[in-house]
Image (cartoon, rainbow, N blue to C red; front, side):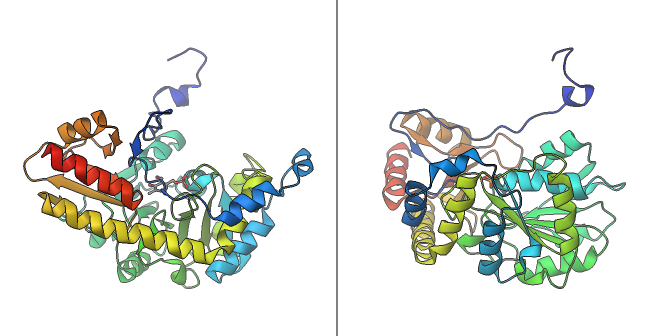
Length: 351
Ligand SMILES: Cc1ncc(COP(=O)(O)O)c(C=O)c1O
C-alpha cells in the first residue's frame, strides 16, 4: 500500500500466474502450455523478417491477421478482434460490456482472472455453483444479469459443455452479452463460433497460446457480431492502438496457415491425454472427463497438497489450487508423451 496509489487500486487483488521456473531440469506441467514448438513456418517467418520494418509502428488494425483468422473460421473479418493474448481480449471485453446495473454471472470454479477484472473495473459479479459432477448448471443462468462469461471447456475442470447448452444460455439471455472463453476448444470441444450469425450478443474468445504453441508471443482474439467488435475497438483505441507488434502479427499468420502441423500436434496431445487419463485411473485417481490439454484429478487416498509438493521435489511441476471443493485435485498439463511417462513413473514411486 502506498499513498501514491489511486484509491481504486488499493483493494484490488492481482491475478497470480502459474510459476515460470528459471532454468533447471524441471518438467513443467503447470500452466497449460503446449509442449511442442510452434510450427516450423513460424520459425521461418521470424528468421526472414526484415528487421528494418521494426522502425515503423505496426498496423493498428492487424489487418493481415484478422483476415487470416476470418478465413480460417469462415467469418467476415469485420467480426474479428485481436489483442495481446486472450487475457487482454477478455479484460477489454469486461470493460466494454460488463459494467452494467446487474451483476455478471460465472461458475464458482473457473478461470481465476474473471474476479480480478471485475475488481479492477468495478463490476459486480455473482458466482453460480457448478453441479456436483463439476458440469455447468445452465438453468441457473436464466435470471437477470449484466452479462455472462463461461470458459468452455472450463478450467480448471477440463469439462466441456455441448453446443446445445450454449444455445440455451444465449436464448435465456438475449439482453446481455455472453462471452464463451474457448482457450482450450481445439483439444476436442464444440466451438460456439457457428452461433455468431444468429446471436449478436455472443462473443467467442480464443487464443494462440495453447493449441498453436505461441504463449510467449501473446496473441488472442474474439469473434462476434459487428456491434460487439465495434464496442471492443472503441475500448482498445482508447487505451493502446498497437496491442500486437509486427512480429506477432506475421508469426501468427504463419501459424494459422500451417494446418498440417496444427492437426499433428493437437492430435499428439489428445493421444497423450487419453494415455495419461488411463494410467492415472489405474493408480487410484479419479479423473474428470477432459476436452483440454490438461487433466484435473484427485487421488482416492492421498492429499492433493502433499502429492503436489512431493512431485515438485522431484522436479515435476503441476498446478494445485488451495480452494474449498477442489483442494484435493491436481491440474496436470499434458506434456510430450515422454514427459507424461516421467510423471507416471514418479507417481508410481510415490504411491
Ligand atoms: C480459461 C482461460 N482463458 C484465457 C486464458 C489466457 O490465455 P492467453 O492470455 O495466453 O491467451 C487462459 C490461460 O491459461 C485460460 O486458462
